[in-house]
Image 1 (cartoon, one colour):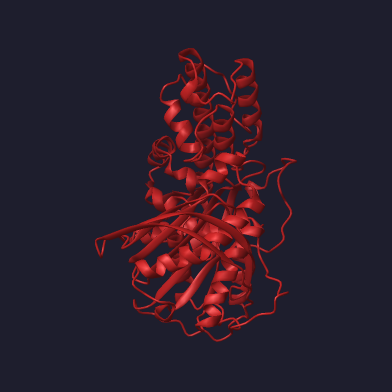
Image 2 (spheres, one colour):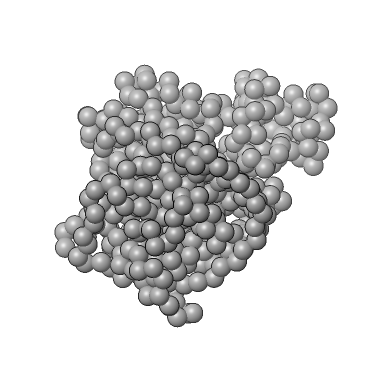
Length: 470
């Protein structure tokens, strides 16, 4: 199990930037700039040092990437990768060694913005990213006691996510890679969530099943090998994390820690069966997810009990607080039951394709929820599998997962050569805000009308398969 040598967390007030573009061996991505400011705290287990500081930064840069035709990756444990993540509402960077040692980790959170706007405001998020990206990356390098010259490569999230936010990270990554002649690796955000489990669990081998749950995505995949994924189920409208956030907002809860922890804490005071909500998509015998209907049920229940979200939970009467707690508990029960039913079916499908599967991974921000973990652990054990959950700090968006995924692909020769040291101001980055991870499993195709079928890019799996045939 890798132990972090440095960990930092920042809370941002401003928005994020956009995405950068590059070719990930056959994968392109784009960058866009943003602004943001916040507070950084850091600690180092290896150096036993800690520090905190305030920071306001800004960074706008562009870069492009060409495909590397003749890679010669290092196959020992002596290379180091910087990972940069700006796909949504956290600005994150980390330095990870190829043996799995986490040399540093820095995260700048936009919690104040989330509270102010009741969710992610893309333009404001971009601004927040732009303001802190320089400091976050520098802090990661400083905590690792390294400079850019000590790096072997730079990995950066190119999708899926918000284009404005993605661009900020991509610009910064290309700026560093171009200035110091470093290879660059475009990372799929959801793949990074899945693969970080292989950093913390050294014995985790392919194939395995992964449930990736966050504010923007619900995804069930069969991971057959690195870069080879089958999509068993996905979000057809709203993801579970978004449903948690909206419910928390409507109940007048404190969103500075996001809706998940707030709902989970309040739900402990309520009766989960006192309010009747129906389980989403009961009639659909697939593994896809839908939370739009459950959100509507919750909103109507809140209106019927005349709960005023403008009155914070801390000021609510005893009777009002109990009514809110009952709704929180009932919502959480049904929201997670939807996950359980989908995972149960996905396990059966996956075992038909790969009987040797022994593990189900859950990752993403919602995987930090203890209730979610405990309920899914029962489902997994009932099917003779083992549940693997990365530590909570590696479930939420972070640079470690990006750096580690970069390391895995770098070993396979999947990376791009250094971009130019200077790129034209009008350079257009190829970002992948909608980027499937794998191809859909035939039985998993949904007829639900609201499913988002638009694909701006081919799946990561199809790109890698095509490149291996050339």
